Amino acid sequence: MVQKSYSLKKLNEIGQGDQEFINGMLVTFLENVTGALEKIKHLRLDENWTEIAEIAHKLASNFAYLESKKLQAIASDIEKSVLNENNLTNIVEKTDKMCNDSIFLIEELKSDFDFLRTN
Image (cartoon, rainbow, N blue to C red; front, side):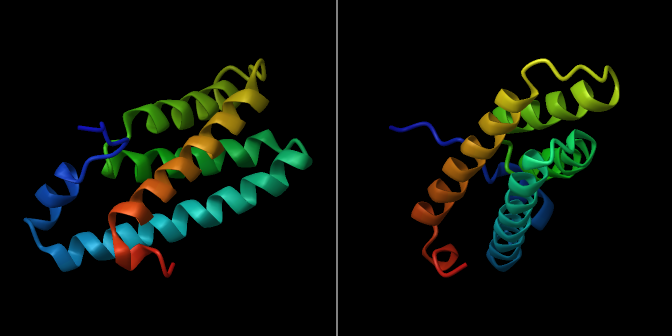
């Protein structure tokens, strides 16, 4: 059995098993993360780390709903590195890792849920 990079346990708890709610949350997740990745791509070119940290903060919450702990940790690390410590060591690598792993998660969700393939 292949280990998934996400879990629907938390969404099931919040939505009390309501599949329509869960599907809606997955669509919203996909839209939010896809839009955020596009913004990050442009902000990275300008080295606008402060705005990237703000986006990472929002993404961490999205990742938490899907219990994608690895992505949540990376997003939180980016936010802390920029805002709290102003430590930009490896920030490009961290940002690239978050973006690449997010794309993998999106593709995994699209593979698992037919209705997400059209989004």
